[in-house]
Amino acid sequence: MQKTAIYAGSFDPVTYGHLDLIERAAALFPRLIVAVARNLEKESLFSLEERVDFLRGSVEKFPNVEVETFDGLLVDYATEKKARIVIRGLRAVSDFEYEFQMALTNRKLAPEIETIFLMPCESYSYISSRMIKEIAFLGGDVSAFVPAGVVKAFRRLAGEAE
Image 1 (tube, one colour):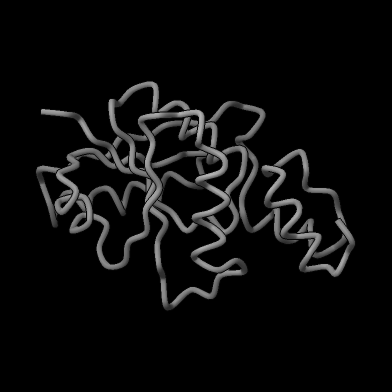
Image 2: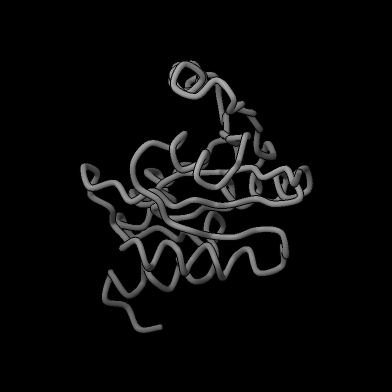
């Protein structure tokens, strides 16, 4: 049986911290699905299609990584994909409480699915999509935090020439 893991998130936008976790998980599992959440309650800066494109362009070098979208419960999606492992990232202690609650809730809903926590490289441990958006909207350079396609998208939003 092939071990499939899922790394899910909104990825609005994808950061080098996300990509670091994707690289780590891709090295551990024969198949990794990066699942972009379609969350109707959360307003995203970038469209679902843009987020998927950013990710696909960033993970091309990993032959065992697929990028898909999903909505609904992650455990239902994981069951549908025959994945028994969910990858979650922990940047700092502040992430732990929320992620711990989520992992225990998922375990109650689907005990056959395990949550594995990975930590990004220290140089990415402070990066969050929210922080990246704030920097970009205040006119800062985000090129050290996100892939080139995301930088270009922020420039388009700001009305800058490419």
